Image 1 (spheres, rainbow, N blue to C red):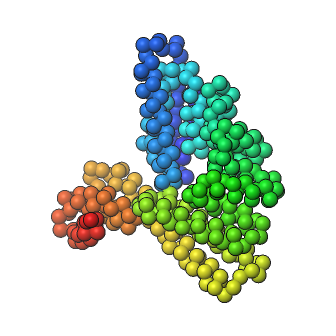
Image 2 (tube, one colour; image 1 turned 180 degrees about the horizontal axis):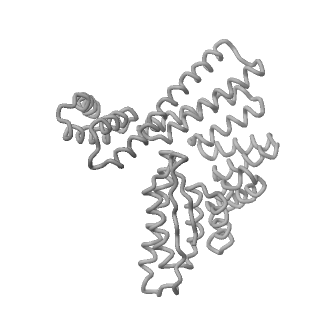
Image 3 (cartoon, helix red, strand yellow; image 1 turned 90 degrees about the vertical axis):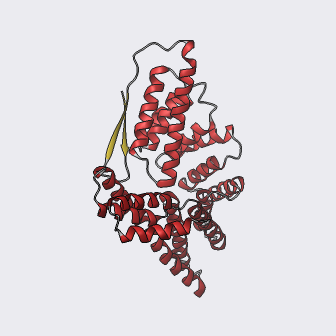
Length: 346
């Protein structure tokens, strides 16, 4: 029996995902279509959860339940399926079970199917890199050999070089990763900025950090109402503030720089306030679900207002409409609905 402990958004809540190994013979050829469908739906469930984690910084319990259901079904239909360790590894990684994820991915990359799968090697490197950079370097190297100029593998190798103290190599690999990426990915550009900081190249660090912030801001505009992009933007303000502190320490600042750095601190506070709204929304959402269908109007009103404040306009409109059914004279609902409907018109 394989057990996954799945942390939710708040550290006090946990959900146990359990997959039973089927004690049956492999299905016959006539079940090939069923196996293919089970594999497809399991992959889609994991990919949806990975995207949700990227967008919202968490994986919902319903997503965990779906992954459990899909993997259990696939395992029963094809207990010797070559992709099972890879999918289990991705699922474990999603839910913070790093040791189990490493075990499953290692098992996969040792197979005929897995040894030539570059992304499996890169994912294994990502799991190793914090505590075992030497092992991570080997995995990233295999990924890069299978997919030349892959930015995520180059990024991983740069991190490994930095952890080993080779700052010149870390910077070289970071620059290569950014060029291969086309300067499109926040994480890659932000890492280059940090490598410039480590090498004391202040002007280059500043340009890269500002670009990383601009990319993060664009992602927030593109995905209003999502938590993940806001967290990424907060991290870019952290980077710019770290750069400012380093430059002040090295006495490499002008009066204008002090003004800019102070502005970044103010702006980061605004982003944190927006993230706090998402925290409040999570609590209110749980309350609405727990009390449905007898949710009190006051709770539903706070939920709808917070949905609107975080930018989830369509969900907010639906919640306010439901509130007016419960409380037809609710002035807050009427005012917000008018404002949201007007703003959403083309």
